[in-house]
Length: 615
Image 1 (cartoon, rainbow, N blue to C red):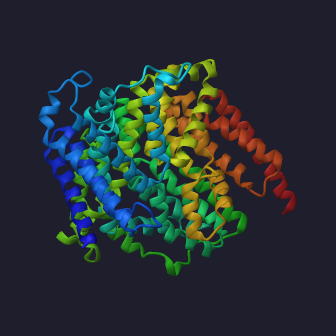
Image 2: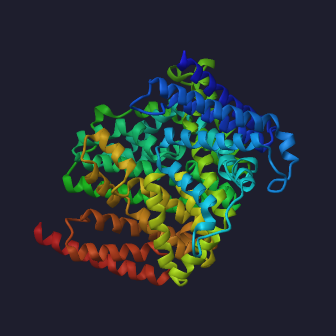
Image 3: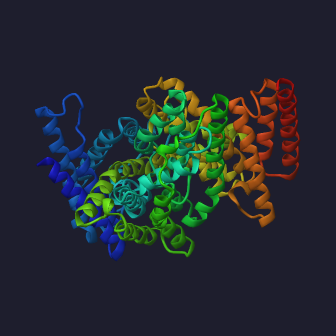
């Protein structure tokens, strides 16, 4: 019975957003309130309050109390929307029951986030609330005059500066639609086609299964927007194939973890955080995609090259011909790529991401009728909507809780103080500020999902980078990259550990291998912070082409240096030359490109000489 109730609520959740997105007739505040109501109800029904005492009487009573603490405040906000809209926030006093409702909602939200993601984000939000309440007792620059009860209630609940802020608005407007879109892709068998296509493209080359993992994870990860979900989905297929081909289990797990993490860096979707970035920066979605495409391709090229060098080093074969998908079936099924093509074309033509996503969902239903096995009728459509809505739940409560942090940080003036302190520490030294930002983002990202990690850093530290004359898009993409690579950064590398579980490999060793395979993602953000040529901004076609070509040569050298193999096994000197050449080539600029080519040529010459000597 409970399972049926969950599916019904999830279905209503998805239909609610598809309908309101198509009709466009619901006020943004009500949309956010309805979005959070559905999401929190599903969390309390789907996630136990305690894994140890999930079915205890106390646990059921607490869950029932949290459901009441969800329905009453959000129901009040929805039903009294006009009255609250006409009220003057921070000036007009609230009634006692309104304070109680605000407290109930905050408590229920923190508990729902704990159930979804663990204690990290609720602790951060709790610390922010304590800071707001006790700020007047904090000495020095971090102190403030404190929040009154009215300010606290209005900031968090009765305005759009806290829980119902920009992050939740993005989740309610864009993110849930793209998650539903990904669910439709999976239900219609398009995800399977991605795997078959990747297999066909790479099977005959050395180490084909690992290259298949890189390509399929890039395709699927861009849509799914979750590194861990990507690992769990594609890793079940790719990791056993890599192990069977001859890769060590730690290496196979690391490849899948790194490739899955990069999915959020790869257009055309890039996960949930990119939509938040649009709202933070005011930059159109299509322009962000354009800026992100070359760094993302460099990332995947580096992983691809490292996989290739490892395969050459181990002399691994490709996928057996008997396991290859039929070429005729692939050609016949190429129409399954139309939904992604539709999104790209619609965005390029200037349509909104919402409209493009809705059209793509419709196209999936249409193309599914070309495959009897995955033909989508009413039942399948409802299942896809239900699965997508359930997948959006954790993002919704995450964004709402992150809104607590962002609201308090901004209203208390902490963001401005933090910027001043960062500038004072860095003494306007851009490199030091970038290093501090990268370290803080990775530390946050070890405990938080990518989206809230990015939101917190974008509020606290990105303004500092912008003040040092870095373009807004470069500063935000810098934070976005490091929020992502936290998934593969030891000692807490959640994507690597998830993959290690599938591969039955040693987690920490897998984590450090993942760090090495994803090394370009730690370097490229520094490069585009100093020179936006990598973001395809402001140069001629010739210059942009030169930047792209030299950067790809650079990541090739970087992969060779990291893997210890180019033509033959590299020496320490050759690895150093290749690493220096890579950095010089990835950094846009004529003189650095010339230096990089000279260093790279020197390494190749040394390799060629040694190879001739041994053959």
